[in-house]
Image 1: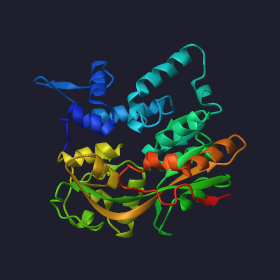
Image 2: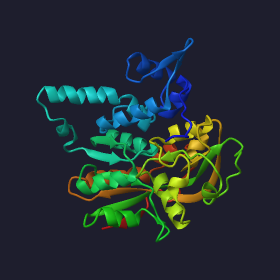
Image 3: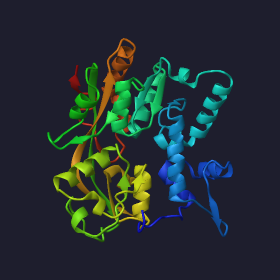
Image 4: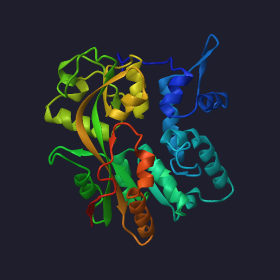
Length: 337
């Protein structure tokens, strides 16, 4: 959108932070031509737009198998760094006469972007369950759950009419489908702002009253749903906010844009503040991250395994170091049909 500053000077360190991969991997992606780059003197530079395009392109190979041990290269961005290989493999399978869709047959596919889902998927994989991961936004993953494209979806979607999380969306978007909903975590959502909060932002209404540039998330993400609901309650025109129409497809890309001065604020999770230097955080609301699983004869074994792992101290110990999460009630059954 005209008037929105564009950041075209990302360093390899910035890209590594956004993708949650090693800096040497960034150089490798650039050398292979997978991630566009350019030189400023002797320094390699990247544009935020190209990084976002890379993240989006990784979704064309959105179903990624898990082969890394738990805790090693398990983040969604680490899988994104392997997406080109997965896409090439799918293309090769297609040229050889194999249906790439057959790769997903019989797999337990977990949708959602949170890091703890990768940890859970690796535990399940180690337990003998064939697991694939999908990395779409929560709203889209619920639609995929209803269509049968995924068997589990992590969601954090706020419903303003009931002032509650997730279950209203489950009931609307997955009608007539037997499901079980399990608690994953409580997280803090609020405003990601530049260090020292130079505009003095304190609440939702400040996004309307204060001239600023917003780093907005994409439609369907929990943060975007929360923002749109809050603006509707304020009877505010979202298109009057500079930057509203520009969508950022990664929370770490959003945080980097704000930290580097390309935007003033964005709605996001506290954990992003802990991951990116140059940010401050204004907490506004606690949100619930839940896992929705379809109940079929094919998923019952996986459901039992998921509940077992979520209730284990070993699994909890894997997660305890993650900042911005409250794991009280991890694994509790919240709803079942």
